[in-house]
Image 1 (cartoon, rainbow over the protein chains, first blue to last red):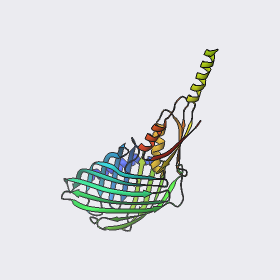
Image 2: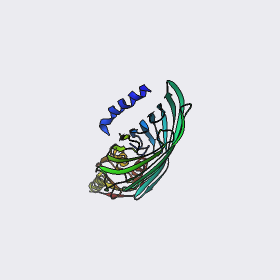
Image 3: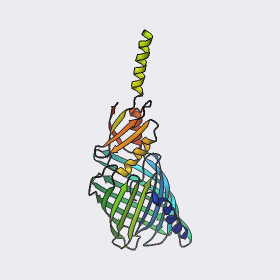
Image 4: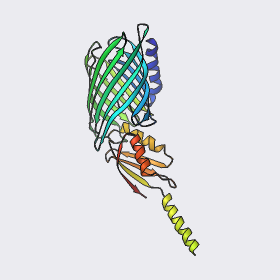
Length: 211
Length: 94
């Protein structure tokens, strides 16, 4: 547990100078680094896009606000379906992985899988994710997350993009199962940053970087 | 005389083929600049590309090619598809 506690911030510090929730697949050959720090814990993932439909990567999370345990393992991200429209894009993704969950000095097999659906235009963003987690004796849970967002101005490619969003989480395994987090998202070229404050009084700070 | 005319015609043809051009690809799904950075990175990695510009407002990807090198429609379509987008039209200007 302590090892991951140290590792995640250390890796984040290395990557931070250059750049949190966006699409789990980028362009072919692209690498995406992401860190999420929110009321559920700290997540770090690094993904490499193999093809327009597949990305492979490493997923690590330090769970908080419930049982405190660390999970690490490889993950496969799959674009199940994409709709490219003149003024919008919609996607359905699957993210599935397996690895080790470390809890109270013991290692436990864990596996997770989620379905993420989103729709985005230049003005509106919506997403919904449902995620199942199995970690042997540690936790078996189903978690849901939904987001809606609006852009206050229509930014073009070279502009700083700003989004106001609200995220709603339902994760029964945590101390507070229903949590609302208003947040602001900024992105410019390959760097994305999100900051928010949750209804259970936790700061959210996410970042994502493509290279 | 015939040889001179033939050589001149050949040179004019080659000069035309080798001329740099501007290619405008209209793309569906082009709504997020963070996601579209893949387009810029992908095209800039092509030896034939001098410059690439993404325009979300007009759903356009403008590609300037280098002289003596070309980029055919099939390659452009594949690169944009691999980046996650759908090409609806390609226009060329010399």
